[in-house]
Length: 273
Image (cartoon, rainbow, N blue to C red):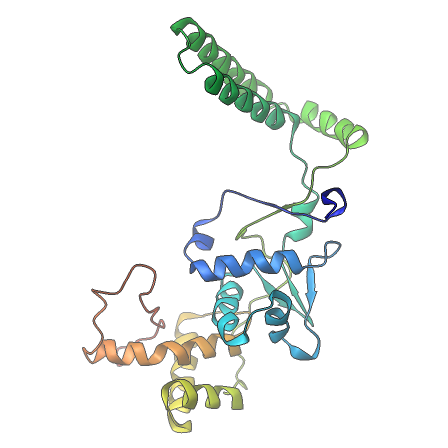
C-alpha cells in the first residue's frame, strides 16, 4: 500500500462530555462512519436502504448497528439531511490549519521527550534551563495571542505559502447547522415498524403502543421538547418503557448494574403532570 496516496483523517484527542457519555460502541461507530464519508462533502448517501446503508458501509449487522447509530443521532454528532448521513462540522474541521505557534510547541515537547529519554540523569542546571524556556514560551504566547491583526496577517501568509495540514475531524462537536429540531407534529402517530418493534422486543400489543405514544405526546407537550427525528425518539421510548414500568413497580434494581449498562429511563412521569 502506498501510504502517500491514501486519504486519511486526524481525530481530535479532546472529546466533549456529551460525546464521552455515549456508550463505547456508539463512539466506535462514529469513528467508523467518518472513514466512509465523502471527503469533499462530509456526507454518506443512504439511498433506498435508508439508515441501513450505514451498516453496509461499516460492514456490520444492522441489528447491532441500529441502537448505537440512534445514539449518535440523538447526540447530533451525526445527522440525517435528505437522503444523506452527515457530520455537521466535517468540512470546517477539514479546512482547519494548525497555527505555527502550536507546531513549535509540539516540536519543543517532542525534543524535550527525546532529550529526557537520552539523558535520564541530567543535572539540576539543565532542568532549570528547560523550566526557564517553558516560562518564556508561556509569556510570549500570552503577550502575542491578543494581537488579532498580526495573527490574521500571519495566517493569511501561511495559507499562501504552506500546504494545509491533513483534515481534522471532530468528536462530538456541538455546532449544529444541517439539522433543525422541531416539536412533535400534531399529526404524528406510530408507524407499523413501531408496532412490530414492540411485539418483537417486549411482546407488547397495539394498544400498549398507542398508550405509550400518547404518553410521549403528553411528555413532549409538557416539556416543550424538540427533536430532529421523532420516529427514532419513539423507537428508543419503546425500548426503554418496560424498564421504567419495572422501576415504578419496584421490580428493577439498578444498584448492581455494571458501569455503563444502567438502563436509560425515558423522561416521563405518570400521575403527577
